[in-house]
Length: 570
Image 1 (cartoon, one colour):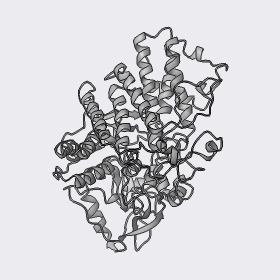
Image 2: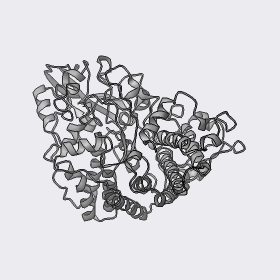
Image 3: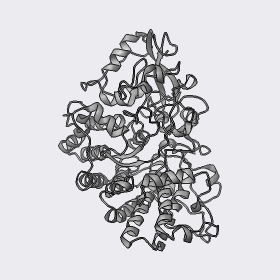
Image 4: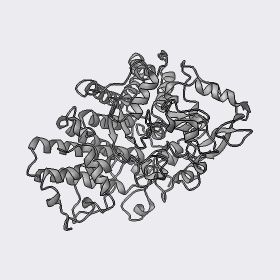
């Protein structure tokens, strides 16, 4: 069998043509012809993976990639032409639902692809029954992932439980939130028994038991958090409240979430052969876990190899923010804000003290304090006038090589490129094992089991080179766990929705909304490539927040068709 990565590369090469799964069955390329042999079916399988796992990782809208960190206050939104500026300053709108970067309706194109594979794989003549069962499990896992992500963004959504036929209605209404959750869990439970714990090397990247468990655990974790797990919704929808709320604050949801995350850890660290990387070198360990392809902490990644160098003018190979400020006119955008900077610890585990708002301080102070930051910060960011500590001694990552000119911001984002040298591509880590440990820590704490919560939390906290957390106060520990999520998973598509589902009381005052601060340099001006004199913290803009934004709006174009109920406030 051919390596899975090569199959994906073939699909990418052909992506400019209309995919057969988007065509009528009567077209020249038919379902019958595609599922006639294993070799042909592999292309359809790879295509389902590529599209279903691409949620939030756009390969067509690359210039707006990772907009979530712009929206949650962790990163400056950049320039006016980016889609994030309008959302940050004016809020989400039904006419512009691009927070997930794919668009609402595109979800169902990909869902149909997965159903078509599942329903037709039995027609392949030269594939064993066991392999066909595995493929069906893979497709159910992909469906669960796509629906999990939609549930988190929209609440209840239309459920498509088969590949729609020409005779089927395309105006399917929203299902209650509970039914969507139950569908995700059911699909995962069907997939887990038939998926392997480990694939042969040439098939690395396909869904494993651990991956299906991770999808299930994430869905149940978000279901347990206060946004959905409440007697009343964030905004009233009358008789349709079940679309955005479970209708009761049920503490047993935390136990269900805990059971799922613990099962994931057991499978991952046992038969799955995975581990939270901890060799005692926290910078190397975190850098490897987040920036080295196919490392033993990654449960599932979106695989896309496009090895055009990042400075070659080909932006299509840059799906994240890491290189977005390497040119003079880009240097202002997509850089770390003070709001997020303050979540990181110093290397000794204490909080860093930054100059107060408006206080002009010598640039040597900036350098000193940046050098005191914890290893996860050093891997994730490249401070001004410093070489990347994630790529030491590499000419591609020196200050002079990467900073194209003036800009603002606390530091430049370089996550996912640990020891990358000239590698422009990377494999976005959809699930890392670290998330299961933090999920368990959060659930244990909400269930009042602080000792177990600390045990799981400290696996991640101490791997970062920080001293163990010891507090047993539930409220204090909750805050620490939430902070750990924000730091450990910066730019990995957790924070924006974590903040919403926790319903943090200060969400509109310096997180998603309110004053967004960043550093200015040289008496309030721009940072230069070398020779900066001073820096100060200042409010760059005021972001918008309204309770309606707890969930995304459905596109006006779909609402106008009369089959969908809009989320409240839009």
